[in-house]
Amino acid sequence: EKIYHAILESSGAALAVTEDNDVIHLVNSEFELLTGFCRVELEGKRRWTEFIEDDLEKTQPLHKLAVLDHDGAVDNHEFRIRDKFGAVKDVLFRAKSIPGTKKRITTFTDTTKRKCDEEALATAEEEYRMLVETINDVIFTLDIQGIILYINPVVEQILGYAASEVIGQPFSR
Picture 1 (tube, rainbow, N blue to C red):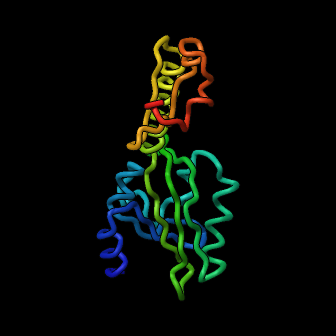
Picture 2 (picture 1 turned 45 degrees about the vertical axis):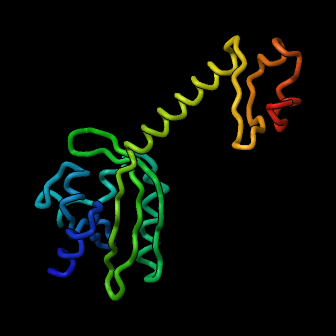
């Protein structure tokens, strides 16, 4: 038990040791932060599956595999959880059986910020692409040898060349 606690607390990730019936046996402080519940509200009282916001049908069988096959592991399964305060968070889930027991160690990595950042980046890229492709000026990029890597479509209106004719050509031509 003390070894489990030491390992759990030193990991830096949200970890829980769960029973084969999904009841949470031990958690670390990162798991408390992720879920909003304190240890005494979780250990021996809650099932990890209670936090799943969606995808329960797909997630629970994967978790069971980790206990059925003692060499089994569930790696990188994404789903959403709801914390004590109602906030929905995206998580990356991993589970691994603890040899000689019916317990497994589960890792929950909060990917909410990363997903928001990816969505914001995709939106910004689309806005930039629309701006570059619709502006009335020629915009282009070159590699270090002076080869045209990109040129916006307005080049055809201004210079009479299709972008596909210019890309790959030296700028100095």
